[in-house]
Length: 357
Image 1 (cartoon, rainbow, N blue to C red):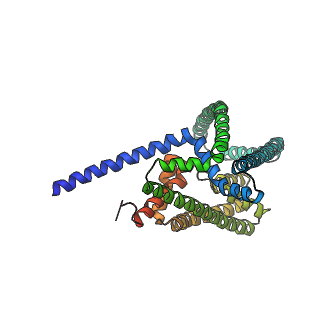
Image 2 (tube, one colour; image 1 turned 120 degrees about the vertical axis):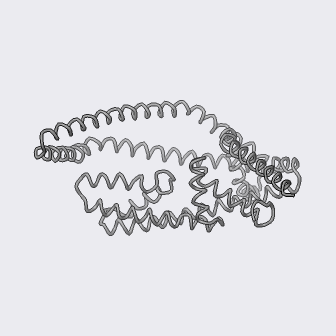
Image 3 (cartoon, helix red, strand yellow; image 1 turned 30 degrees about the vertical axis):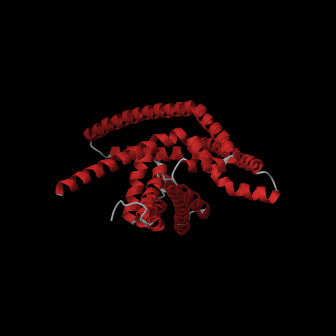
């Protein structure tokens, strides 16, 4: 009996391990290959209800209404992309025009004061120690030059890689648009065909999973919107207290940037703190550092708790899944792995599957 239990445990463990490996490779590589069609199907699914409403209200054939909705959707997206690109390009061009003046008024005096302070400090030191420090500085400058050379090569490689990926990106966009038209026109027939290929029990399970994932995605979006709102309030109060001009606008921009998993608030606050400290405004630098530390601590406390409560996971499990998901799959894993674990827990709780007690 004990032998049978061990054998069953090993078989079940191998089965689960193989299943995890298959799921990993499907998510890692399969989604990338089929991404245009997955995105097209998702867009067609989102446009289904508006299409039926337009078809009913305007008494149009469903296929014609589908074509009009897809055209309207991609036209709107295209206009938004064009407007954002123009605004972004204008802002970047304007920033480059300000760089000479910024260097003359801010960076150059800052460097002069820095080197003047170093020179004054060297005059009070022992000559032998000065020679040692000079050697150290020369080594640092050499290392910094090598770092800049490597960085420039990396930037050039990144730009070249992006330029070489543009044709592939355009092809994916083209396939996505064309696929969306075909899927939206025959959405009901495609779903009915897929339903016929599987058993009613499996189809009900897939529908159940789809409904839960869609609802959970909405919950995650709502949760992160709430976290972003809390970050905005904290920043607005903190920046106002330390008397930063245009505190509300700056707080809004940083709170939007805070959604990014890698950069977050620190992507703006840390360079800002360093720049202000180099300028000699230590009071403002300490105030910004205090605001950043408070925001970071509160964010790390409330994010797992809010997101975990909304999707039914313990904060520790949510935090672990967000970290592992980000390491394995990037931004997709940040949201995907917690939702997947939440789905498995939900299916286990309602008795659909049995994974854990």
